[in-house]
Every structure is written in C-alpha cells, then in structure tokens.
Length: 436
Image 1 (cartoon, rainbow, N blue to C red):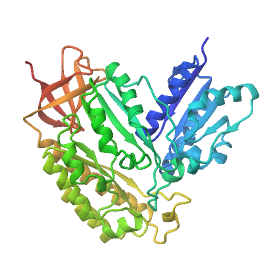
Image 2 (cartoon, rainbow, N blue to C red):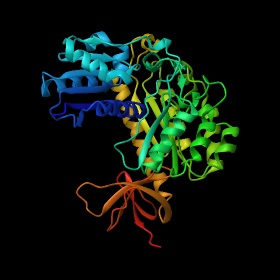
Image 3 (cartoon, rainbow, N blue to C red):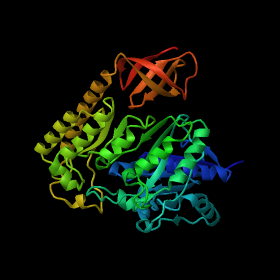
Image 4 (cartoon, rainbow, N blue to C red):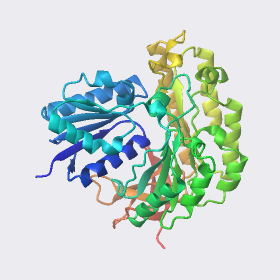
C-alpha cells in the first residue's frame, strides 16, 4: 500500500505554488496525496507568518494533524518555519521544520526522519540565498488557471513586514525556465496563467538584463495561453514605459492589484513605503487611460502605529477617491524583529477593529458600484468550475476579475465565452451566455 501524505497551505499564491511543487516530489516518490482531514502517514503544513493570526492558524493545523494520526510524521515548512523553527519543534508530533529553501529535498528529509525517528531542523540561512530555487510543476489542481512563481524574496524592508526575513533577498527565475514550464501547462489545457512572486516588480534586478515586462511579453507568445494575470504589484513600476508596452498585449488581463497599505502620506512614510499618494494616483490614472474598464484592487492596513483619527479619515477619503473595485483590509499586527513593533503609539485593538469595519463596508460599496457599471454589457468569461449542488450553474471570471455566474446545459469548464451581464448578486454578477 502506498504511503499517504496530506498538505495544508496558508497564505499567499506563492505558498500555493510551493505546495504543488512539493506535492509532485511526493507523488514521484510513490506517495498518495489525500485530503488534510484524512488519515495520512505524513502531514505537511505550509505555514504563513504575515500576521499573528497566521502564526496561530499554522499552529492549529499542525496540532490537528497530530490529533488525526499521533504516529504520523508532521512537517512545518514555509515562512513561520523559517522565522521561528525552535518554537515549532516544541509542538507535539512535529518531526521536520523546513523553511523557504531546500524544499526540493523534502522527501529525503521525511525519509531520514522515518529511519532515525529523530526530529530535524532543516532551516538554513535565507539571507545568504542568491539563486532562485527551481521547483517546476507539471500539473495543478485547478483546471483553468495556473499560478506560476517567477520570483522569490524582497529587498524593500517596509517597517512592519517580516517577509524579507522569511523569504530572503530577491531571486529571479530565468525567462526560459518560466516559458518552458508554462508551455508544458498550456499543452495540458490551461488557458490562464498568474505570474506571481513575493515582490514581482523586482523581477530581473538580480539577473541584470531583463525585467517583468520582458517576461510578460515572452509568456504572451505562448500558444494556448489566452490570459496573463499578474500578482500584487508595487505601484512605482507602472510607469509610462510599462504602459506603452503593455497596451499592445491583448492577453494581459485588465486587472492590477496595486499595493497601497495607506491613503495617508504620513502613515506611508512611517511604513517606509516608497511612493506618495499623489504618485499612486498618477499610476491609477495611467492605467485607466490605457483601459477605462480596468479593475484596480489593493491591500490596506488599518491601525498602523501612530495612525491618528485624521490619518485614517484621510485614508478613507483616498480610497473612495481612487474608487477601487475591491480592497483587502487587514489590521496591523506587530511582528517581532521589525522596526514598527517597537514604535510608540500602538493603536488599541478596539480602534483597529472599528476602523477595519468601516473600511470593509466602504470596500463593499465600491465593489458594488464597479460591478453595476457592467450591467447590460457583454464580457468574455473564463468558466472555471461548476457550482456545487447546482447542475446547471457555472462560475468564472472576466478579464477584469468580476466573478460571473451563468447557466448552461452542458459542461463549459475551461471555456471562454461571451456573457451578457444583467445583475449584481452577492459577491458576483449574474449573466446569460450568448449563443452564436
């Protein structure tokens, strides 16, 4: 009987990619992949440490695995493992802690634990890493959209962020390696690719002769790929030169996730962000001149140390002025080892929660406003999956990342079809597929 291994992933799309790469290593070694709540001989939790909530959830999942099978080998990998290996090794059942390097050898580590019965701390010095760790994938759990990691690490060192310490310096993947992987996945039927990384606008800075737009143009030439979507971007990268090259790339989705964090210049300065609100506004205007239907989404933090009521209100006004199509709101969480954790004037949890609620409500309103603009319009939708329990309902996304639900009497998964949008419904839009 094959040994069974189970995975649980927390955090970002980069973690999702890393998990798939590790899964393939286990499959190649003869393991069977099972759901996390099933019995397994090995459990791997790909951790996240961006907030204290992420840390807590990581610990909870590791303990759940131990309860499911106390005799299993349990491994913690990823960002939390990279930054706090010793505390993770104290959790009952943990036999392997592996950070963000050497994951391609994870099966060897597990087999060594199995032979010796001794726990292993395999966390290395991430700050000395200088080369992208190549862990290509050949399959993916999604049928339509595939996430490809093209870059690792970050050199920004924003005052609140632990990620540069967890992921190390920037390392970019060679263009030919990215293209080869996407060609294989296009041959397998994938139509949309998401280019992602820890700080993808830094792509190529360590290679010397290439940058992100060069990579996008190379991917654009791959037959079978019909959409290219980008992960989170630093706004400063979107200059006139980028726009002049991007506007001719019809496969590039009209959706840009531009990290903001705050709409107050004073707060941005304390965060060590490298742009002003005016510069951010210019970037948005640049993208909207290129395509008036573009979707601009973002992340915003509330309760950063020293954030006054006036600064928060300024941020609220800026968010409404930009009129984002979607925002992800999160409360500041002190990360030990970052400068902001030592700042005075830490904002009280109650105030952070109140500000978060207000911003979330504004975000919902802006999202609804954006969607209403597309009522009675026809948009191309890549249908991704059948809605559970509904035999004739399918959901997918437009180029500008509007979720659409439509009826079909045949299986339309992995098809791009014209859809007339007629109603905003919950977190999606309802549409009817246009027949030829």
